[in-house]
Image (tube, rainbow over all chains, first blue to last red; front, side, top):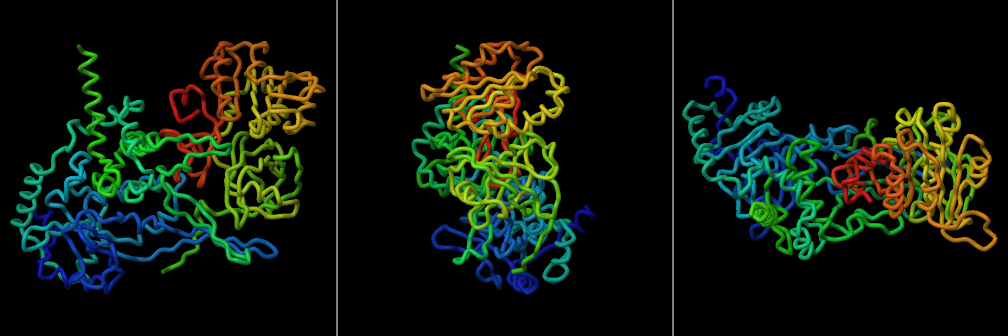
Length: 357
Length: 278
């Protein structure tokens, strides 16, 4: 217990504003701020005032800082010869108030971009960004499915981690950089045994609140998808899908991109950049000659679900769904992740009964 | 914002000069390239490169030369889009950007000592020419070599002089067919599958290597299986759009596989169950 105490610090709620003020004096601080009714976004803040800590997942996940929507890769000059320079933009910052679902999302991206061949643009930027997590004591809304993917509890991937315990936050110090923040901002107090017991109690009570949101154990989900490629559910989802690409844009683990060129008017210089792209858009899987390997919306939606629950399990041994619920919240056609999973499960159990009879 | 020049990024391109071009048909043009700094390109038959036309874009193109020549490499480009159209406008002396090579090529070590049945449809001859020329240089490492070629019409035939050479050689069995031709065409007319039943082969020691348009595979593979060629002895190579070549951008994904990293050459046995493959 004694050793654990050293890993935890306390921040009284009345000191929160001062903490953020001092932190923003050290480096850029990005935190959730309210954007109209029930909408939130990560934005730069200069004081603790504008921050909303009680928020449903932001419109865009924090992946926008690790993998910007628009990222320059190369610049070139065309003259007698061609001069090419590889570039990348990076900026030290600290993200404050990252929910556990989004921490899981960042961990997924880490796995993708550190897999060989490595993506050095991502890997060079990553250490510049410090992360302060924030625990959810309860569900944010009905779209979340963090119980299913076990993302409602912290599982690393942060420098500091805040848990709201009423009058104060108990703060897990996970890295040296986190320790330096605690020391430099001078807003924290050492933790007592009693505080740790309070944290344990909260975690215990969360077990009763966060439950698997679908009637199938997570370990059976890949198996469910194994036999669901020809399922009727995809046709039904595809029928409603508008192919707008919103679900992939707001997903914390979607990382597909396009690479494009931007050229000056005199065609003497230009740059090559990558931008977010979406497998839900019709040209995504098109090849020369007009063949499209995922022509229908049903095939594209199916691909999205398989990229969350099946393919990454084979490659990275984890789901690429963090249960944040953004895809369901943003969908204009009311395609809900939980509904889709439930429909697949129902179809499978019905079939099992039929086969048995 | 801090702007860093990063050296190790995989998106860096090397400048290459076009040494020679040769118009092959109305739509296809052959380019011979070499790096400006004198480096060679270290590649295997069946691999591809990402080629940049600065100001226009970057695309994947398979290497059509055999890696037996270290000083230059060749690509055969069909003008079908923005970048390929721009490439067609380039001539000897012009500069392009190259990165790669990428992907898994034809498994030479696996093929050595066996008979080969090489089946090319249309532009599929481009990557297969790399393999064929490699095999011909190292002819004694391989058993019988059958080459079957199919194209739309005699005017669409690529590498005509080399085809003639293969036709003349005693150590290669070469056959070609066209979908349609003028009455003065003396050769075969019909789809490529019509050539397969006539090939005299020992299925257990034959590897079939098939590259062509998506529509071709199903029919060719059916014929090969009818010839009792084992599924593990059928190799295919796929074409997809690609943006990174690094297994990240997602464009070339077919189910759980990335064509750019896991392919483009696949063993039929490994991908036969994938519905997004063909």
